[in-house]
Image (tube, rainbow over all chains, first blue to last red):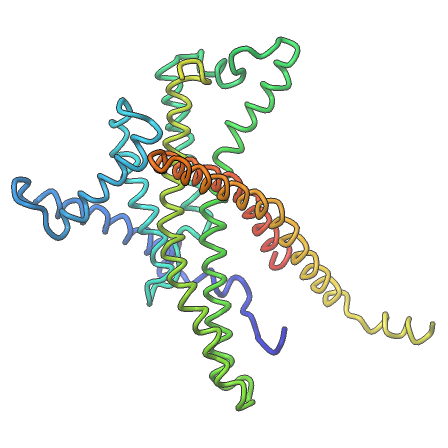
Length: 256
Length: 89
């Protein structure tokens, strides 16, 4: 491929286990969880009566962003009780995404399917549980048929709605997060390799060396772009979770 | 004709498989990007229009826009996953 040797996919996505069943992805996930807990523990220590500084400032901004930007927009005022769940979801996903651009780590933990899949299944359990709690067994009726569907269409609509809520929802949540971070990681790897092979030994053609600045510039731009993507994907995952929870609390549009 | 069959005989089946996989992976991603590209363009364009008409509703429009983008983009991302599966698996 144009003299550029792209490493096999396992080389850019796998590492040797640190000890059996625990590798770098697991390490990043553990660090992300601990960092989130630490931030909010530090924030809770600060004096609430003084003007917030440092960790507390950051924590308050995040909580306000979740409340104003996600909960109020989708669940409304009665859904403010969901803030802790959505907040921890957002913080954990963001801290798992951001190692993509942090030197030494250089790998988003969410680029492997395990973490997005577990989070999506958690959201799936939570929104079905909420539906059962708020509407009892009527939830499944509402889930299958929006009000006012003609009887003749009920099998068709019911089938489509059942598949889309039960199977497609967790699948698309998982794939959206995983594929976005994987694509970003592969893009960064590609441009880093291109820069390296142009500037260092591989080409052996002097006039190609200065051209290495082009992929390097692209690499810088993509790194900035991936910070935005890391934030945006955490935001989208959280807001979709909020929307699904809202759908199961109000039924299929009959209380809108 | 003899020359042609001689060339065919020289091609390693594993090589042929890799070439076909790489080519179809490219087509898979390229085709999967068309629909979502049109969709996201239309969606964001309309959202900007709505925000320009009613700046006070910008927050609500932006949230809905991100939701729409997330659903539309999923198709392109599934295409990307297919690309990875064809190319590397």
